[in-house]
Length: 358
Length: 166
Image (cartoon, rainbow over all chains, first blue to last red; front, side, top):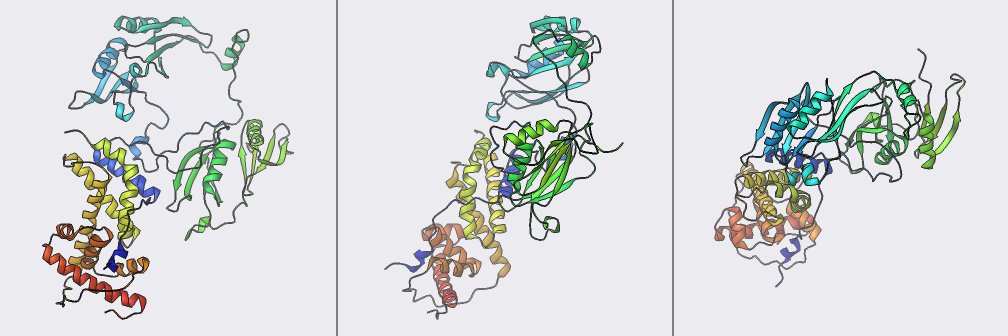
């Protein structure tokens, strides 16, 4: 006799939980295991357009503790070395480094150490290949050079070589106003020791380089970076991830924060920063119980101040974006230039040099 | 003891939809399924750190999830007690063709004891002996529980479909 209750049998089928739940749980597991969390993107955006040049960074995790943000305007080199204890000794001898602290595991490996050279902080650790922490010796080279400002480059260079560093380029005067030399330390890291010997403007540097095989250019002056700006605009979208991709990959905004919603493909908040200042917030329109998202999609008009609208226009044209107003000098800014585009939802974006009255 | 922590993290992406896929249809709500999924993985972290995992894999994690589910029903049962009624446990045959969707709806309306017994026995397909182990009962007591659970199910199913329960 067949048992009617057999109808209850249920095959184990895979079912993905909410992305935000999956991410939060991973962080809890990492935290419980005492493993340093791997930065996860805050949202699964569609793939970047491969032909577009952008210099975006991955959006930072949104709920990182605030004490990790203290170095917002600096970067600390975190050196991986094949023998951390020996490296700490070497850096002390070569660069007068002062060891501030170390975290040593039961297996003798140093998981984390901090040292300072003059007032500059460095972090250092042994190799942990399973975490992706590998040293230049393992990699067979290093893609990064530590550029270290010193008061007396010849003395510092000699001291480092005496301690065991390999000279790659002896100290010499450079047309940009520094005297510098390059070393490779016994752990494979490259150092450029540099001493300022004269103050040279970029224009002067460019002048000195006219007869060389290099040409020097600098960011056009004129529009000071206004930071995050004083007023942020908010744009609702029926496909917020796509609009964010467009603004980042084509137009040139950078992702500061993207917060996904519980519903797949929705964005409850984002901050896209214009590199010369200001922030636009893109989020999914028509979210329940959210009065801010209850506005007509595609009805916005935004003006972005940039010293170089031509480059932005080139990127937009290359991507086939609709240009509703070609590049022209506005009446109110006869020496400037401005153009306008329409995004795929109808919003108008104008880019111009006019930065307001002083 | 080999450190299985990294292995657990490696396993996470693959195991999460399996564990959640096991729990979600067996829980009434997404919130409960998420809670129990979290409990499962955090218990796994604990077990890994104490070196108590014989074979770390998805199958083991689903076993942990099953324990968490049973623990949940036990908690609910304690809150809802008393609910036992002496019943006649003869006449346990039922000749009907159950629609799986309606059957799962019916199951969701049963009390925690009956629901857990039927879930382990029929959704998970465990033999009575293993059901008994999970519920921490003797085999005899489990068989009686299953008979009562089936009867409760039939009554509830009659209400679902508008038929009289036999």
